[in-house]
Image (cartoon, rainbow, N blue to C red; front, side):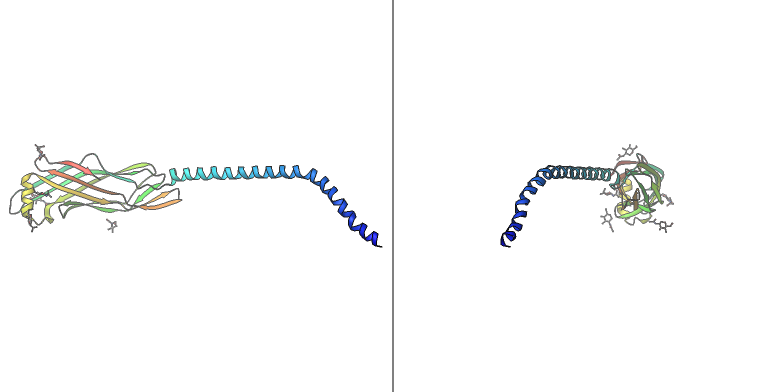
Length: 216
Ligand SMILES: *[C@@H]1O[C@H](CO)[C@@H](O)[C@H](O)[C@H]1NC(C)=O
Ligand SMILES: *[C@@H]1O[C@H](CO)[C@@H](O)[C@H](O)[C@H]1NC(C)=O
Ligand SMILES: *[C@@H]1O[C@H](CO)[C@@H](O)[C@H](O)[C@H]1NC(C)=O
Ligand SMILES: *[C@@H]1O[C@H](CO)[C@@H](O)[C@H](O)[C@H]1NC(C)=O
Ligand SMILES: *[C@@H]1O[C@H](CO)[C@@H](O)[C@H](O)[C@H]1NC(C)=O
């Protein structure tokens, strides 16, 4: 009974190394080839993901990046119907400024803006107001709008300074207008943007013209 018992456990022990050697000899190259293939596949997938990510990033930064539209004054500002008196008791002036503004939309999407009111100032006093109607600047276009402002000294109360300014012949004016609009880029990127236009100029009474115009 005992030798039989000993024989049975020994037999498999002797068998295993042989079968291991046989199996191992055949299996190992196949497995590493499969591993090589799958790791190559993984590298390709990662590469494609990186390329896709880069393309998306480039696409996004070029086409989807919201840029605040430019807001500029037209090249000329004309003065119409200028009237003024230097009478030191009741000095006054009134005129109409005629110009245009341009909304420069460099985005790959439409910019729709609400109506707004611009102001013209003489020192700390508002001397004129102008309306900009609701509008839109389509993708990558410049929308031009005519602007005409009636300016009058009615609200200027300091007759001393007004009289001296008119008789000096130059009046410093500034104007301010702020647009409020929504940028819509391919229905993906939607942003509110507020382009502003601030200008400074000098009105020459004798020449009925505008000097030293600058905007920022
Ligand atoms: C414009 O100014 C002139 C002279 O200062 C004045 O006689 C006239 O009444 C003013 N007109 C208006 C509409 O304010
Ligand atoms: C925009 O237009 C509406 C309706 O005409 C008006 O009630 C509103 O005061 C305007 N807004 C500005 C800022 O001019
Ligand atoms: C009016 O303007 C003059 C000259 O600019 C100045 O000296 C004076 O203080 C002003 N008066 C008022 C009430 O602001
Ligand atoms: C009026 O004249 C004074 C002094 O000449 C100057 O400092 C001031 O800026 C002028 N104001 C306007 C609105 O032109
Ligand atoms: C105003 O305009 C007149 C005529 O164009 C010119 O002779 C004058 O020099 C101008 N005044 C100033 C202060 O620039």
